[in-house]
Length: 195
Image 1 (tube, helix red, strand yellow):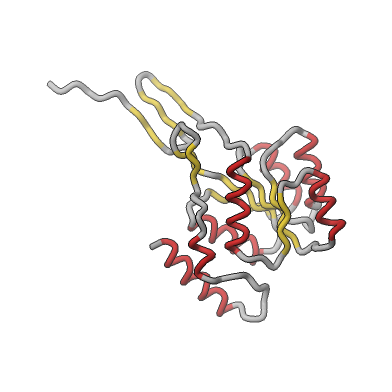
Image 2 (cartoon, rainbow, N blue to C red):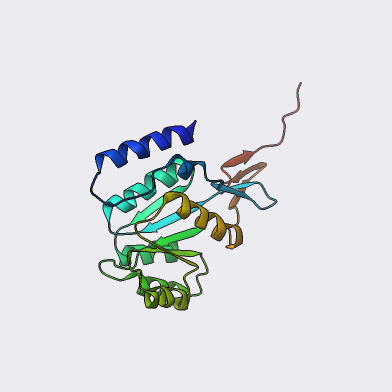
């Protein structure tokens, strides 16, 4: 049901933005097999994605599309904010543009890798020359996708990266006999005796 509503919404958006950036809005885009949670033997963990892109249309499209598929999505519209969020937040994947204000994507990526941050990074950019792609991989990018892009391909690439990338451990808080698992959005309490 979500997929159908999302597909309809994408098609409406596509009709409204005729002549602007082209994105694949076919129904297969929302039928991708990616589940927004992973089960690593300890239950489902909600996946958090950071989108660092200054183009409002692109970042809004990604936030809407990925959120409707169940991801928790944060957006930074410049390199400085993106680096700060990526370095200090807990993300399962970063989607990073190259041409950003304040600090370019190359610099963001180099800083993250220099600090030992191993969060998977998918470069999503209009920079399509082979030397640009090579530079991204040499700096530590895990994947590189060129704009304009097909949403279904982006989701498939995310799926691939999330299967092999580090998944944040579930954060658990225990208070007396209550247990809160924030990553899985679960709470546990011992059964109360009847009587």
